Image 1: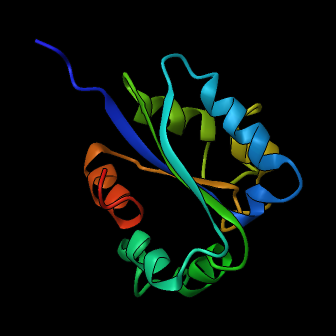
Image 2: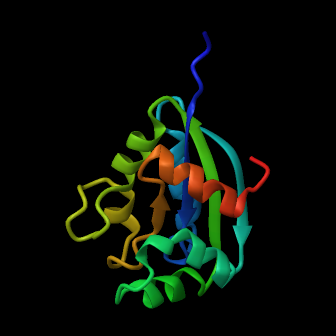
Length: 140
């Protein structure tokens, strides 16, 4: 029986696409053992309705509007990475949401500015990936 590979959805946010940060972030992702980028695209900016769908679980919280504004203010790269155990691997390399407490060498520690402008987003579970991916890649 062939095991289905796990997928994770990712966003390199506007705070992560400035200068050549985005290229370095993609290189870090591709260095993760077994990682394969299935698809990606550049959005300038992410349409507000898609950003709101992505962060639907945060609706009604004080940080929802600023979070959406920060995602819709510039260039973002969205995509899907496939690999064995890829959700856990990418979440580990991204680091904690707050760059100040993220582990040394993680993407958010290196490229993040603050909790909102922390350079990247990725799915936190297979359930999240199944919800997030179709928002940006309906045919996948």
